[in-house]
Amino acid sequence: MFDLVVGVGNPGTEYAQTKHNIAWLFFDQHPDLRSVNWKSKYKGLYAEAQVSRSKFYILKPQTFMNLSGESVQPMAAFFKIPPEKILVVHDELDIPFGQIHFKMGGGFAGHNGLKSIAGLLGTDQFARLRIGIGRPQVGGVANWVLTPFAKDQQIQLSLLLEKINDPFTECMVNGLAKACIYNKKQLIS
Image (cartoon, rainbow, N blue to C red; front, side, top):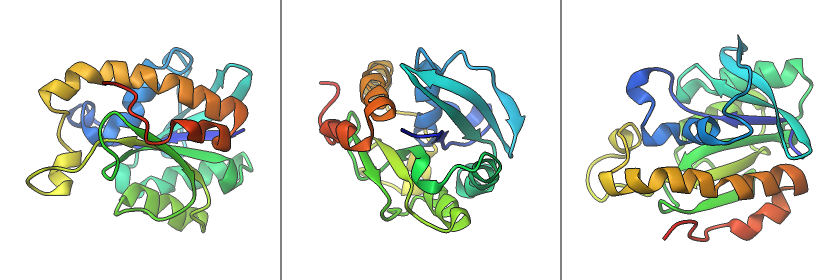
């Protein structure tokens, strides 16, 4: 259903376990994605992948979050992948931890990685798998997304990432509309 799945995040060990890198954490634990053969090109790491019977490319831009489009656009152009065949996996402040939401196009809710991708693709009409990280109760958003999960969430994180496998597979095999049955349901208790 999608030809390119992009996980946005920030390169470097200091960001590896932060909320902003939840897409990379998801890729790294998924049984079909964690052992792909990564290549370096398009200002990112990319690989061919397969989930169930669906084959696609997977990309981790290495440009830092706010410049993700500088990796996505050249790869999409080279492989002639239209925006509507791209799924971007990203952290989402407006969804509580433990929930996900699939959607096509729309606003950015202040997410600079999405803004960069849309700006360089020339459209916001790409699909998203939004993984909830919730908003900070105190302090600023910039600091929140660049810090690790709270201790109680760290305990639940691997279970949450595992629980995203089925919705992701549903999306890749049967499409976005079918995967929307998972929208805003609590995946962990």
